[in-house]
Each structure stands twice: as structure tokens, then as C-alpha cells.
Image: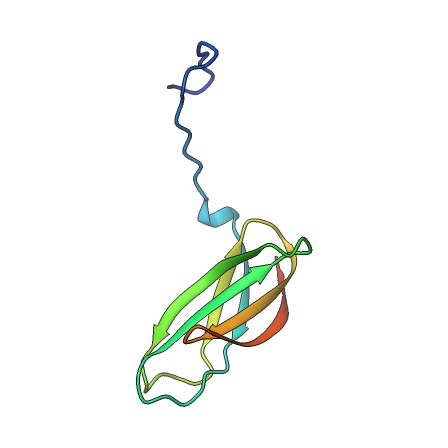
Length: 100
């Protein structure tokens, strides 16, 4: 249905919400990856003061990749978050990051 349209009560509607990249808040962190002979799977989650954890980054790094890559995280709201780094599915370390 078009914007500002009316529907009959009880009608099922579908709503799509888009995340506009220019409105996302960003922060950069530097990872500390272990030396590996194969792919290193990395997942970074962020949690705000409510403690709800969401995935902010996922990637696989080849064995010859930098051990200290800088990555960019994004979220909808500015503020301080706790990030948690998981390597090959295991929690490794955490820190605090500020999104602006």
C-alpha cells in the first residue's frame, strides 16, 4: 500500500524497514587474530547498556592475512557499546567502543 493510506481494521499488511547507510553510526576496532594455518572465522558482536547482543561483523580471514586488521562496525544508535570477538566460534576477548 502507498504511504499515508488507510486500511480496514484486521487487514494484514507487509512493512519493510530499510537501514540507510548514511544514517548508521560507525566505529573502527583493530582485531588481534592468532597465527593460523587455515581460515580464521571471526564474528564480532556488540551489546548496549541493555545487554542485548547483536552481530556487527562476520568474516573469514586467510592464513596469510594481517594479524591486526582494522574493521568497521555499524549500528543504528550512537553511544558506547561492549564488543565481543569470537574466533572460530569461541569467545576470545572483549572491549568497549563508541559509535558516533
